[in-house]
Length: 287
Image (tube, rainbow, N blue to C red):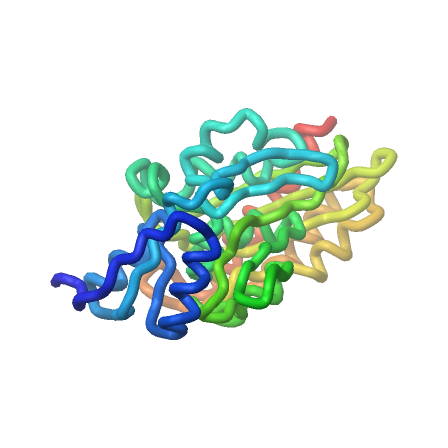
């Protein structure tokens, strides 16, 4: 099926892009990678009057770490993250997630910030960045504002972004040098959406867990934080007993439903196993 007719706008500046969004309001969509938007338009699930292509906008392709943490611009592709040597060590949760995003064709064009704006509860970046306390910067007609990810995700494919706002970058706070993480994903085949995903991130303080992040993919209406599991890990020495209890609490935090990918009980079991496996992996990596 072909998309409904629309006006294509390729602004040269961010201000021009925002002016176009303001003119169309609810009837415009932003195009970055297009790997989610175009299929929706072809299926007529989305029929915007205008598509605003931001790929020519300067300064939105930054992937860099500085004093304030990590910055991921709106035009940073999945493939850029997959190839980046930056996303290891303290940023290891993101580095582990990058090669698991869909398939190589999608990774070549899709963007990290576009994935966040799409707010698919099966999206891998949502959990990886939730576990690392990320926030996004949204620019609109009244200026810029920062939105923590838990406040961005309001429901399946629903965010707190206004129709006239564009995510310009995601920001991840620096967890310090004694930090690491990973991302585990169960999929039916390569390139499939997650049946279950678990993001784990730990920042250590003198041999104990200073701060823990655990986030879950595809087992709720949005990407979820397993806050009780995080609290159980804080201040601990990551013993086997602590890890097992955190994994149990993470499974309790999941809100899966039964479908063709598996029963709810099966998915909770995968959350528990992946959380335990991820925590052990991080512990071994920082030993």
